[in-house]
Each structure stands twice: as C-alpha cells, then as structure tokens.
Image 1 (cartoon, rainbow, N blue to C red):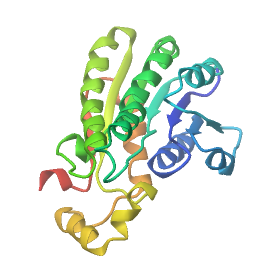
Image 2 (image 1 turned 180 degrees about the vertical axis):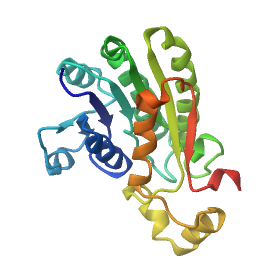
Image 3 (image 1 turned 30 degrees about the vertical axis):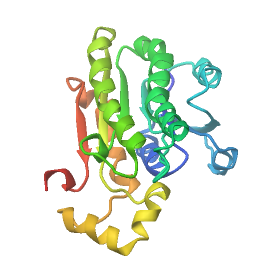
Image 4 (image 1 turned 90 degrees about the vertical axis):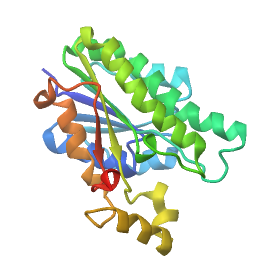
Length: 236
C-alpha cells in the first residue's frame, strides 16, 4: 500500500509549510500548493514532497490537481489572503471571501470522493482568532474566518456517514509573511504579547503537530471541533 497522502493548500510557506513538515516527519506523502510559480519552484522536492501551482478560485485548476492524485487521506486548507485597510472595497472584499471561504469549500467538495474512498478521511480547515472577534481593518478576512468555523461544523455533520471527519484549527498570532506588518510594529507587537499568556509569537511549527493529530487515528472520535493554538490569547 502506498503511503498516506495529505494535500495542503497554501503549503509552500508560512503555517502551511510548517504543517507540511509535521506530516513529512510522520512519513506521509505530502502535496503542497501555492499560487505563485516562484514559491512553488523554490520548494525542495523529494520522493515524499511535491509542490504544485494551484488557484483555489479556479475550478479547473482544482479539478486537475485532484484528478492527478491516486489517493488522498487528509486535506488541509491553508490557502488564504488578507488585505488590511483595503477590504471595504467590494471587489477586494469579494476576492478575499472567494479565496478564503469559497476556495476552502471548493477544495472540500472536489476532494470528497477520494477522502471517502480512504474510509478514514480527514479535513482540517484554517480558522483564526478573528473567527471569534472582529477586525476593524479586515472585515472580509474576519467574515471568511467566521464562515470557516460554521462550514467546518456543517461538513462534519454532512460527511460523517462517509467516514470523513472535519475539524479546524484557529491559530493565534503566528510569525509569518502575513503578519510581518504586525511583528515589525513594536507597539502592536507589544500589545499582542501582553495579552498572550505564553508571552511570545507563535511559529509555523507550533501548528503542525495539532493538525496531524486531528488527521490521525488518535482523533478518530473528534469532528466538528475548532482547536485554538494561540498561546492562551483567546482566554484573556
């Protein structure tokens, strides 16, 4: 039997690549995606790591990728964008929703048959602390991540009979390119650290082990759940 396979959208960098490293360590065959050709080509491929270009808003692109896979045991939806201060423009708003929320649903639907065939399929969606409270500069991002939580619960109900479990993780403040404007703003960074009981920024490799756990047999009775990985930020 071939190795178990996980597909991680947005997996060529940041949190997605941190998750990929966790699955590689366990021995999975890992497929990561990115929308920029340069980011995809920069990944050092190996027998167990493949990187492909994918636009989660393009149905044909999604169909081509899913059709190229001979098996799929886990899908991790990390592809996402944010446009701080620009999301009140309706075109930008719709673009963020299209990538973050509709793109996640598009991937889930496309992968459903392969995940059902595995008989222990798992999906993990990327939520956020902004799933719980608003972001004044990012209404579209906040709305999309709130939607991810309800989408996760809905699919968990709908696909339980297919032996597909659907969960989400909600990272706190993680040091990535997406959060660079915040980490480089000493005042904003200090505000975040002051509220975070563990008193540090998270790292991409803080997320991977929990995502792997949710996809593993150890979590066989967990579905429809959102796990916060935030250093305690949400409880303060």
